[in-house]
Image 1 (cartoon, rainbow, N blue to C red):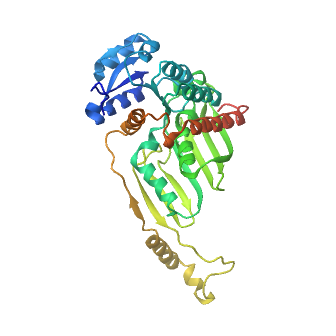
Image 2 (cartoon, rainbow, N blue to C red):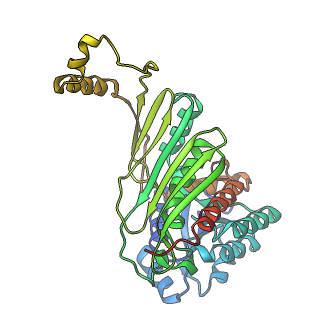
Image 3 (cartoon, rainbow, N blue to C red):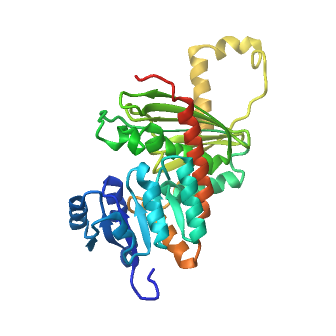
Length: 364
């Protein structure tokens, strides 16, 4: 994808952490269509090291310099507390902006970013890269087609154990750290994407010594009536994956919440609404014996044979959202319906509500 000048789509990279590195590495999946043109960091030496190791042609001495460079879009991978400042730099410069998750430090900042982008008629989007990968879109299509029936619920988690470190942004409330902001935002965003608007959100958390939520759980009620349960942790490992429950089928999703690797759709066996013993009483002893229970489990396993869902996947998955931005800019669009600005603000408001609810909870 080259513009009228016959050059690749140019990206300015703001931030030099691990996520920024992954984004630049995956731009290579787009080959000659895109390039990381310039990079900026709070520490110029970090920007120089980043550029040298990844082949970025230019190093900016400031974020403002990167925003005003001859680029088509900014990828903002600085800590959440800086997202608003850096997004507004790009918007003021008339550049498309892709802002890493979570979109901002809070809903008020997210709202200001949205309003500035719309007033300037500039493309802006939260970099919720999971929504642009092939499998989540396919899952949404299956839900829309009614293959799962009436959706009753969703379970999702993102848990990984890290040593508590006050110098890390993960554990620094001033920089927007915490389990919900860094990890819980993924299953939260997927719950909103697959099950629709949320009418009620409740949460609880375990606050660590640095003041961030090190573990949290959320319960959501969607406008459809479906219920979601979400969990995130900075201190404990968990079971990867998620599940969507419908009246016709259950969809079990493998892999981490940020990059689902596959899914299996299991048709639901609907039994009668019985209140007493099932079947003739003379067989009750057999049914409740060890052999009867083994037979019952075997029949249940046969019913659980499911349909596997898969989708082609290349690179590490970041280039899908980059291509979405490039296509939108080429078409003159200022938003992508897969991750609208209004929805990003809505998700930040849910995070605000959750954090307000646990503000008085003690440390671990």
